[in-house]
Amino acid sequence: MKFGIATFVDDDTIDSVSLARAIEERGFASLIVAEHSHIPASRESAYPSGGDLPAYYYNTLDPFVTLAAAAAVTSTIELFTGVALLIQRDPIHTAKEAASIDLISDGRFVFGVGAGWNLEEMRDHGTDPKTRGARLDESIEAIKVLWTDEPAEYHGKYVNFDLSYCRPKPVQQPHPPIYVGGNSDATVKRVIRHGAGWISNALPRDVLANRIEQMRDGAGHDVPLAMFGTPVEPDYWRAADDLGYGQLGLFLPSVGKDETLRLLDDYAAQVQQYQSG
Image 1 (spheres, rainbow, N blue to C red):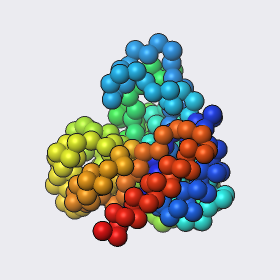
Image 2 (spheres, rainbow, N blue to C red):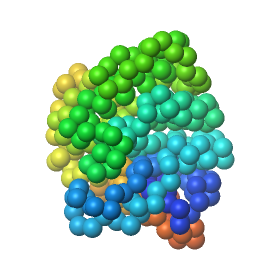
Image 3 (cartoon, one colour):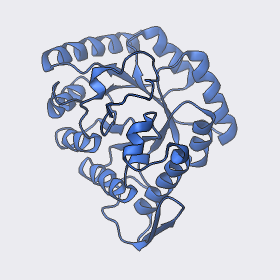
Image 4 (cartoon, helix red, strand yellow):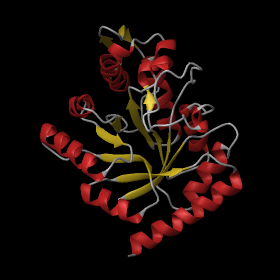
């Protein structure tokens, strides 16, 4: 089981280049970054974890720009969207951005995607929350076509384009790994439908076990598993390892450079102790 770092990269914390270098220097496997285009002031949608929305949600950098910067100064870590809100994105632009990062990084991009929870945010992008699941499915399918076919075409209800050329193509063949976020029956169906992995949040073990069993039963095989926001708790890591997780993204608070480096040193020491024990 690999250990990466999952975080919200903000405009008033450690910079993307320093963060990526520090993660790689300490032997972590990946940088996993969240996405929110903006946070509507209305705040009608309840924060899924309860309570007030954390401050770091309000000023996140664009994940593709962040990962491109990280790609330029690293050589080993995976560059993972955790998750890109495809329902708020143009799939053609997103296919090009993702393939560009995969090219720049020599095949280190991992595509985590999701439907999101902030209804006002998606409405501002012209997305009806009632159709976000269908839109997400079509966007995933369309991007896979753009990555693999030349020329490519896709004809759906929400995503529709005629034969077109879209380059660059990803370095990874047939395309970068895809992980679907969420915790619902619809998420289970989506993982199976797209032959994808699951990127979960740090849910209770029983919840994770139930979803993983559903996915494995439906797919007829093991499903790749990753996690965003894993607590720094070795007992929890053992439970995730037993469930078959291939990668845990340890949650890194959005703080300044000195505090970030201190936390990464601490995380790396705990990971080393766990792996040696």
